[in-house]
Amino acid sequence: MEILEKFEGLKVREIVRKNPKAAGIFSDMGIDYCCGGNVLFTEVCDSKGLDSQKVWQTLVEVSSERNVESNLDFDSFDLDFLADYIFNVHHQYLYRNLPEIRFFVDKVFNKHGERFENLPELYELYNALEADLIGHLPKEENILFPFIKQMLQDIRTNSPAKSPFFGTVNNPIHVMLNEHDEAGTILHRMREITNNYTAAEGACNSHLVMIDKLKDLDKDLIQHIHLENNILFPKVINLEEKYLAQ
Ligand SMILES: [Fe+2]
Ligand SMILES: [Fe+2]
Image (tube, rainbow, N blue to C red; front, side, top):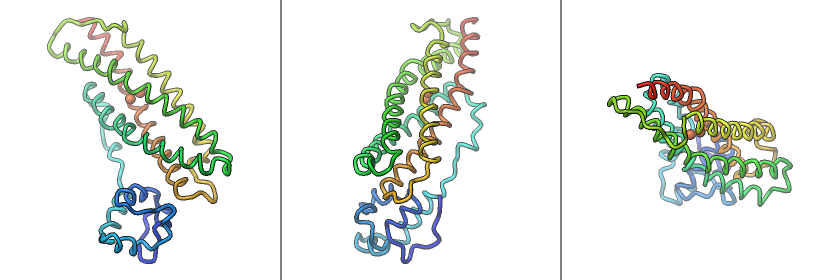
């Protein structure tokens, strides 16, 4: 993400063009960066009684946010803690962001769907991904994750194993893995048709914001699926063996 050195002389729409992350901050502050974005950043701040220096500082901070996740040792997490982490970080990310992404996907498709040849397919791909995720998350939250917590609690308290209605964890995990694969295939195709999330020449600011949000969604989802497929699920399958043997 490009961080601009200074804001004097920059127009609102130029800032969002260089740094689509600014869109969220401008929206929160009631600054129109799309159709009304052809005005100087400093002028808009003045007209809204905002300190342009402070707004700029917020923009810089958001643009340079580091990925804290890379410093976490997920492999050492207790499995109930890891399930909570996934829920609080990655599921909540989706609940927060899917409606916003949906807004931009609809807007850009409705306005420019005929002008850019990848937009109709991108629209369909996003519909499929959103439907996949909305059906997927509650299964983990209501079936799989509570069972993981139950197993750990029983192991810690030396309580007898309880058999779940789904037989063995292999069954829900099998379903989850298939749904992850579906999401992975969709993401792969999205990357392909957007040239790895590069906005087409002549794209408007909403289009740029949509592409940037899809790129973030991709990144978050890849990490989310990695934590489940590669750490949580294999360990849960092992844990169940220990649980049943106790
Ligand atoms: Fe998940
Ligand atoms: Fe999942």
